[in-house]
Image 1 (tube, rainbow, N blue to C red):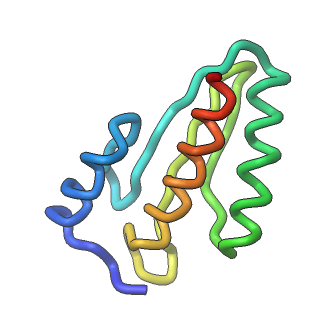
Image 2 (image 1 turned 135 degrees about the vertical axis):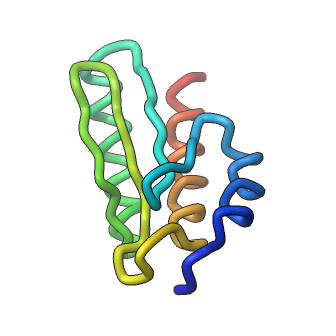
Length: 97
């Protein structure tokens, strides 16, 4: 995977308004109704991570999930991070319905 330039990252982020770029990673924070809903989303995201063989730095406190994505082998953000971000967005949007 090739590390993306900051300009390319900012362009790609236009499709992901919840995400910001800083410290060589893209970051987002999602708030859910309660802990159960947050943890349920995390479980579904975990399956996507395994399928893509790409794992986030993440944490949750009660109903808030914080996620940071970067490709460690490339030393920054790659298309792989945006593919996972897209899957995460799809899961989170599903929970909001």
